[in-house]
Length: 237
Ligand SMILES: [Zn+2]
Image: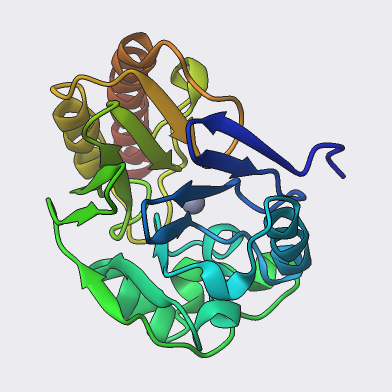
């Protein structure tokens, strides 16, 4: 269990440190709307409640929950927010979450089951959330999964990257519904953005975004070549 529960990492932006295997949870306090990015697993919910209480917020103060993608370690707790928050995810993630598509969500690996819920807002590429002090643009970044998105904060140039980019150029696992081709394309599109910091779903905050993205692109291309060669070799046997 992590010692730390919540930190303000930028003005009105908080990280809630979840217990593994949960992803990090980010809270953005807007001028009059609060956004939570990912929830972690179902068993992480009590930690969110406790973290919010440290900054005098309640679960009912969360207006919008945005899921970076459909994996259980990121979305397992969303049903707890259903009655009072708008739940949002990319449309390719929304379909899988609503249908409890275990092929992609992988809740069983975590010993928990995803609760039946509805995604209220099906996101498309380049949709913007304007919460006054921050503006967040949705960037569809398929690859890790088909429904992966990043959120780009347009004034401070922060990127909330889910499992698409990690610190130090660590590349994503390509999961069911994902693809290396899509992943490389997503990274190349992200490399065109001016990014000051990356807030990933796991691991450390990245303060060297350009290098991390470039390294990820090179590693992903190498990995794709290796995978293709492996398939060719297997077919020759
Ligand atoms: Zn994932």
